[in-house]
Length: 112
Image 1: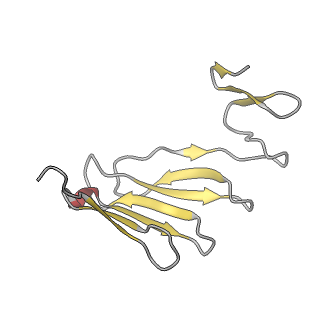
Image 2: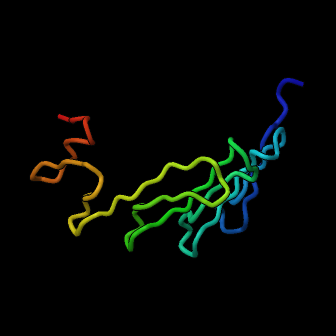
């Protein structure tokens, strides 16, 4: 059968996906946790080993993502630590802004 469904989503009454079950490879099932304001706190794969991943997310008072860190025992993560100033611009991530506040550079990439 060529069109067999390979994933199943689990959605609680609040409407947020908290699990995506991989029916072909159960070590690749994805698990999520949310806070009381429905913001994602963490996401991870169910397996271990070189293909596993897991991340914790941190948000500021306005709900902006500013940090992402790995979950112990998971092989892959994409770290982030980038705080925003009172002007709502990211201040610790090698970003450049023009006087009106538009993003003009991201590391070695420049925008016009």
